[in-house]
Image (tube, rainbow, N blue to C red; front, side, top):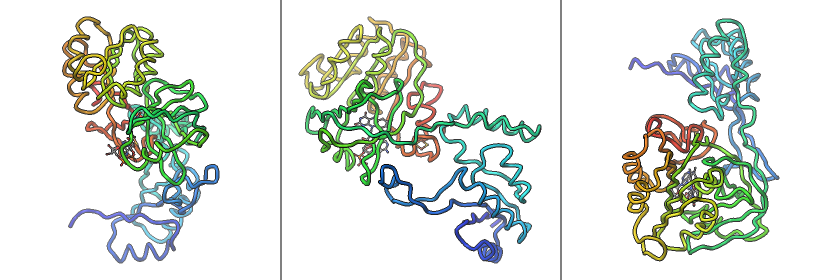
Length: 379
Ligand SMILES: Cc1cc2nc3c(=O)[nH]c(=O)nc-3n(C[C@H](O)[C@H](O)[C@H](O)COP(=O)(O)OP(=O)(O)OC[C@H]3O[C@@H](n4cnc5c(N)ncnc54)[C@H](O)[C@@H]3O)c2cc1C
Ligand code: FES
């Protein structure tokens, strides 16, 4: 009782009938419009969505949205929240003229970090007050949503559940960013890029998708989209701390910062098959294995206590399982200012462009656009 109910109107249905039905049901207002379609989007003749078809949103439905709001306003005086393709002040003005009272913006925010969204909205407000159209400039022109086709050069098995996919081309990516790997009609999942020249992914078999990836062979096709995420701004002596496949996210940092110190942990020597690459680049590499096959026997946290005192890094970059991150940060912050400690943990990552919200952290940041590496002010 007492809560207003707004009904979202589909442009696919009969608008007049929808409005009559919602008025009869006692709705307080209308949201117009819902997505159009569903439609099938193909890439290389394969449907991009696992479901094959999906609702269309964004700028392509702007005109339909405005027409619908126009028609709705002729039928009812109930308040209308307009949404569908709004990306700038001019669009808001057009919806207003059509009869809308409030405005919702969604797809236009694709790819924007939380700070960028704040700036976008304050600029939009200014545009609406002054009659200008400046917020448009803040829209992301390139969302990296197109897939790039790669061939597998080699699928290198490190152990039963761990493998490296070496692909046939380089990738342009900054340390700390990630990509989505797509197998048409089988799905797509996020991964760090272990190396960029040529592209290499270090993958652990966990479920259906990684099981399928583990079976792809030399010459097979793999599609990647991205890169996504922000590269943390680190400039100085970096301590790279990685456990398990978290190591995959660290090598590009080592490549860019030749003074890095790497501290890598895994269950056994096969988990650390990539360490030679770190040896070639880093100033020091320290290794721990749970069974003691190589390096110190134990976990990275044990090793960290000894290393951090001696090496005195300026920044820490951590990537690995949650428990590991918690333990290493506890130790690191005894020696290094917390804002210089960046950590990345896997969050459920689906769109990669900040729209679905599935990767939200406890502070409401979206890992795919604000991270995935966060310092203490952000986690
Ligand atoms: C930014 C980022 C970088 C990553 N880098 C690597 C890497 O370099 N190597 C590697 O082996 N793995 C990496 N992962 C984890 C990888 O995405 C999951 O292992 C993979 O999605 C599992 O899919 P699946 O179908 O095999 O397993 P599922 O059976 O679907 O899931 C098994 C587990 O994998 C995780 N997972 C599943 N779906 C997702 C998702 N959409 N986003 C995040 N986690 C998921 C969950 O913990 C889940 O419990 C990364 C994840 C993120 C978010
Ligand atoms: S908001 Fe969709 S994965 Fe981050």
